[in-house]
Length: 122
Length: 108
Image 1 (cartoon, chains in turn green, red):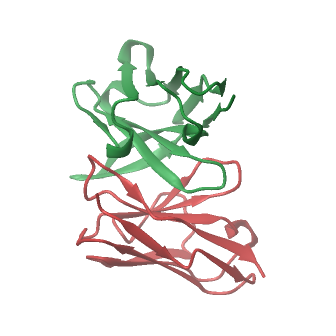
Image 2 (tube, chains in turn brown, orange):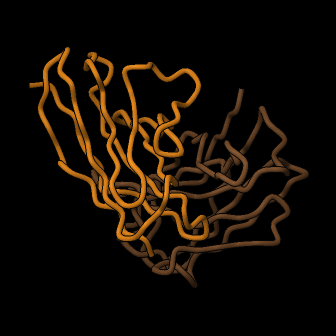
């Protein structure tokens, strides 16, 4: 069974930094592209970033470039998101999610983990 | 970025009703469209991929249709466990995924 468990969230002051982690199990982690998706309280889903299985290809939402850094450690089956210069609008539940080529040439986010809440407030 | 617009943003329905949610893409995305269900305080769950393919384990009362820019999610007979928020998402541009704003299905 695919399991994705995010951690590392908490209450942070504006301008602070945080590193989120996601522990993966139940599948061959290194062979899957992974994503971070966030959801502000009472709002919809917003894609943040994705990383290829090897870690060589990384993409970010245009509006978030510069403050977010995605990385992974395939030896530890772990995905990370470093968030710098935190702002109130970064307050959200952050989900890690697996990208799967569910059909040849067709990729979708097929598994989502338990999210971790980041609250930015003074 | 490809913009995804869902309608309605919310609806009220009764158990047994047929429910239809629409999603429009800002450009042609062929059939690269997915639907997710999210219940309160839970992670989203994939229901439909490639516009009309049912994810394993999803009840057959859920169906999807459409291609190009216009898509539909239909619940043929609404069940109590279906009250949730539904999101469409395009995977035509996998370098920049985008979601619709969501449709909340509430009990009438």
